[in-house]
Image 1 (cartoon, helix red, strand yellow):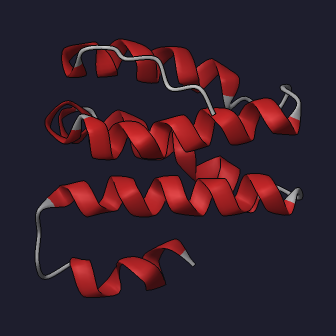
Image 2 (image 1 turned 135 degrees about the vertical axis):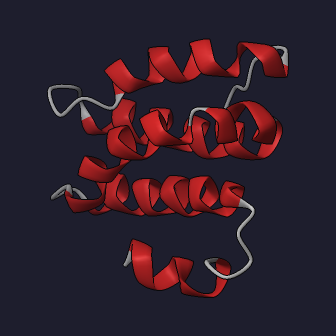
Image 3 (image 1 turned 45 degrees about the horizontal axis):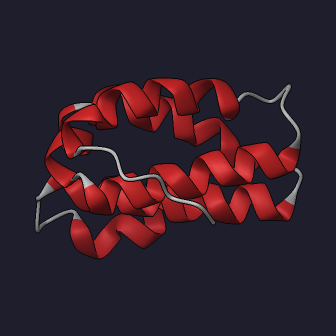
Length: 100
């Protein structure tokens, strides 16, 4: 996968663009790519992703119940990466249960 090098400060703008690619109207490969990129951004730009967490989670959540297993798996990885940004050690052990 191609991952263009953007400054971490651009992550909120990139997430905004990815939200449209996650829409149910898009083809499933597009949705998987957007979700994979979102998961990558949670690792590459954790401070910026954590700052927009309240907007990010509602965009990722509908993809968890997608009928295409590839989309659901990519969404699970993205949501897990996003929840990992919370920094709350009390929540970390239950993240897998929250996502499943």
